[in-house]
Image (cartoon, rainbow, N blue to C red; front, top):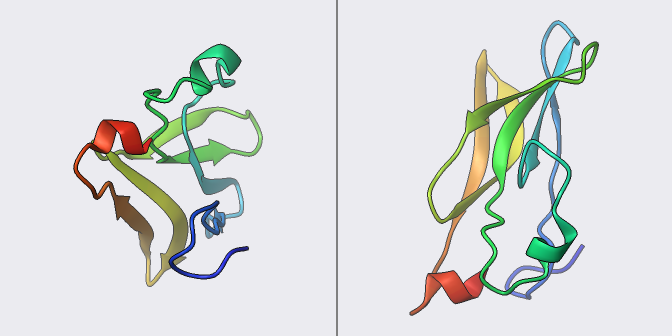
Length: 96
């Protein structure tokens, strides 16, 4: 993990549902990544929070924000919480 303010991967985590049947995690898509597309500088790779059913493997989109990463989900006091990172800079499309 890198220290604050330095470029690089952000820490991420998963949250386990109270019944233990699913987890919440941040993914760029609900399918396997397209290797050719993910190497393009303008590829849309914004993180979304999904709920993953541990028995079936099915994924359900829970949180999505335009031009923002949603990551580090956590369950507390009966609610789902997460962090959000907004694109900052002159040209947000170039930042991803």
